[in-house]
Image (tube, rainbow, N blue to C red):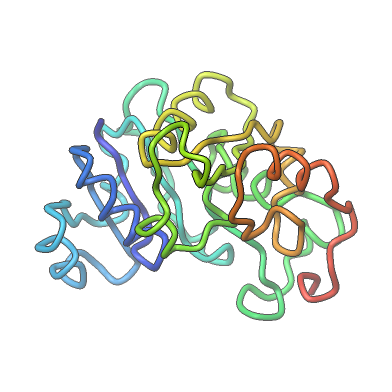
Length: 220
């Protein structure tokens, strides 16, 4: 597939490494410009592009930028994407550590990915947000392996969700349907599933046990 990745930090960089190794055509962008991605491009064969061009022709677009940077993404970001594009949001709200206080999340109770998709202007699939970046390189396992990790995936668009789940399974991880975007608070920072390195049964249990109240560390 043609895949666009916006953000080349730990998660974005390692997804670029893994997806190019699987044979996907990856375009990667960051806020600092394509010239800063030369080393990653030489390592992986990915194509560095400006953010505004990252989604061009893409069947999957991965948005992996700090939450506070989502409103600064270019307008019409997805205008040139393939029909039926699946947009993955890996974002987390870290008000004290990074993002500052976001009133729509704190006061109106919007879940992180609902807030993000309203700025992006397209439904999103929440995935990879609680995954350690290094696990993307070190923890893939073949299907049926008892040590294969499972990742929660939330989203409202059934077809897009299935496309994302298939991609994650290709990467070497099982998936668990975590419900719609309004349910994705169950995988936000501070919940039992966040950072969990376990199989599908444990992930399902952790999602079910998630408390609705956001922990103090993740409130502004």
